[in-house]
Length: 301
Ligand code: GRG
Image: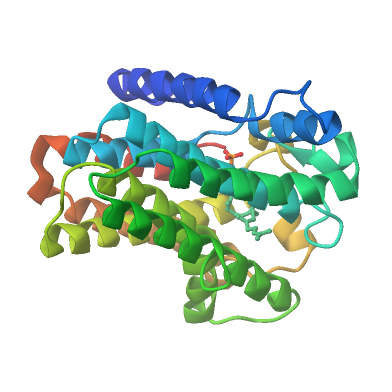
């Protein structure tokens, strides 16, 4: 995690990133368990890397509802496993064809394509196994709803659907509305799921609170993507730990290509401002969600 001016947030985030690493260490099959090569590759892809933004969002949302730590850590790990699966598949030659991820060779480069495909499949299954076999909510019906939310966010009506639109959009001109539709699915759906699952791991929410959380999550998910587009242009490969400048190279429509840098930055700020408007009704318990929104628009990688 890069350092922001806010030491209190940095300390909180660092502790939870380390906590997430310990949980993932524990839930991923051991590298000496057969089939060893697949398990080594799953651990290679999931451990020791990434900002862990989705787990941080789940932990922060859990603070709204006093969610017990053993429940939030499980939903946070499940969402992160889905995220890592998406990165491994996204990097494959049949998709983005990338060789660098989280500062190291992508999974299919370090292992091979077939293994990387199975890593993604297995990480996805492990995510659902975790939230099905552990208690993550106050009642079985809420637990089922969490599983449903994660499935919806990951599948063709969520992240995978957004990825399909992304692949179809290469070389095309999209309107800002079309771009937004793509990113609400591709990046936004899982970010929203992280917030919702974290909150649902605690005590009940009324419908106005749910609306507010949904609003926050949608704004933060889009702000994250707008910043990703800006960083793809402005940051270096070394800082990002993934290949910079790929969007332009692949002729992909982005917020920067459609709006220009300055308007894209203004959009990220507006989304940030809008995300924060959803939080006052939660008082002090929403402090971490507000700080993550700040982090998302200030991040350098
Ligand atoms: C293959 C089903 C399938 C989906 C892939 C999320 C995704 C869809 C592709 C990733 C490609 C990409 C660069 C998307 C833009 C936003 C994004 C999700 C960036 C990566 O997430 P970070 O910055 O990564 O949170 P770390 O490594 O920090 O976890």
